[in-house]
Each structure stands twice: as C-alpha cells, then as structure tokens.
Length: 353
Image (cartoon, rainbow, N blue to C red):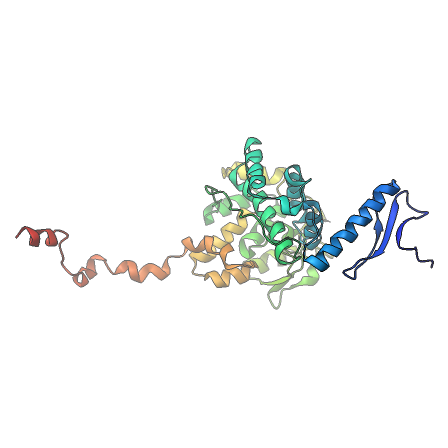
C-alpha cells in the first residue's frame, strides 16, 4: 500500500485534508485535519509540530481541551452500566466548559457551574454530581494522563440531604402483597440479597447454583462481577421460578424484563401501601439496614453488597448499636454504685470556704 508523503495530503475517501508527520517527540501522527481548507490543515500540522517541540525541548505540555478529556474519560467508563449517566452529566457540563482548554479551567469556571445549575432549580445533590464528575475528569487529566500540572480545588456543596428510605418488615410484607406476582418475586429477591434492579432482571439460570446456594452477577453497577450467597428466602424465590424461562430467572409473561421495573405496577403498589416517595433501589437500602440491625458488620456488609469502598457502607452504621450496649449499661440504675459521688458545685463551694 502506498504510504503518503509527510505533510498534508488528500484521501480519495474523504473530503477533508489529512496530515502525516513524525514529531520531534518520536510520535507518528496520521489523522484528518477536519477541514477542507489546505491552509487551515497546514496551520493545524504546524501547531502539532510546535507543541511536540516545546514539550521535548522546554518541558511545556501541549494544551488539551476539556472535550478531549471528556472523550477519554467516557472511554475509560465505557464498560460501566451507568455510563449513560456519565454521558448525560458531561453533556450538561459542556454548556459551561465545552470551549475551554484544561489549563483555563479555574475556580471561576467551577463557580459558574454552581450558579448556573442553581438557577435551573437543581437540588444540591444534583449539583454535587456535576461537581464530582468535573473533579474526576480533571484529576484523571492531571494524575493519570499528565496533561496538566494542577487542577482547581473543587469542594462539594454542603447541605445535601442524604436519602434514608427503608422499610420495616410489616411495610415490606404489605408492599409484596400489593405487587403482581412477577414484581413481588423481584421485591422479595431484592430484600433478601440486596441486588440492584438491573442485576435482578439480568440474572440468568446458568449463573445460579441452588445446591451450592450461590449466584454470580456479571452485570454489576461498577463493572466488577461478584458472587452472592443465597439465604433460605432467596432460594425459595428462585425455586418457585424454575422452569418459567430457559435463560432468565425473572420474567414477565414468559419474556425477559427489558424495561424499567418502576412502571405503573410498582407505583400503584407503593401508593396503595402509602409509602410515598419510595424507589425500587430503596429496597437495597432496606436490605442493608436490616443487616446492620441484625448485627452484620460493615466489613461483611461491604462484601455482601459489592461496594468498593467502606465509606459507602458507613452510612448504615447508625442502625447497629449492640457494640455500645456495654457502654450504655455503665450508668444503668443498678450500676450507679460505680459512679463516684462528685458534686458539680464542690469546686465552687471550696472557693467560697
């Protein structure tokens, strides 16, 4: 195959000019210039060569744009199930940072994001998600890709109200009773395993071993497969579904569940029970809360739920108090003999004397 000469050139399959060059840093560049104007293509090539020369001889890093960073960031996150959420956030951030180079992004730019989203009426939790993604992209550009030397300090806004919705056992039983059979099975399974909605609807029989009481999840939120132990209640749910479908465990009218679980049937059941703003994902919070109340440690819960960091589990620590029982009993009425009879006024009385 004929190799194009160095410089700018035409390709028969493209309307744009292309560039071909070996840079002073040893890198080979062959790509579209993105323009039909030859002078613009030559200027683009000259800039690439200048950036490479400055990097080699003066240690000056070539400028990279915010959009360059977003493209690479999304490529890194492409295997995660929530990549669509990242894409949505990045599209919104493009309103503020789309035309910026990375070294131009400073505290004022971050302030603009905050003020802009506040004017849109977004809550603190939503704004913090925008800030967290911005911070993650900039830190990757600095620490992993070495595109920039420093990043602005980005603090998440205080005052975010942590969602703390969970059911007691009576409420859970009433919710299950109001659900149609296919949905009731998924609710019971979520309450006994802590699995997310997508993990439940994607569970296949070839990843379930009822004899060994284990299931293996390959489609998880963080992209890391994990095994989950199946307790007696989870085994009962799956055993009742055996034979309904050759591949998928949870189905509706003989077909895999492809749509969101939180449809009309879910909202109707929640309304009949009077649970208000209750989401399917809150069943996972319920499962974790029940575990902590039953004495499951945070480390055990972290492994059971597939969380990557301990901080994600510490929010449930408030539900376990058995480790404080001994301390609480120290001033029980039957133990007050252990308390030294000091008066809060004794020191003042000594001075008065």
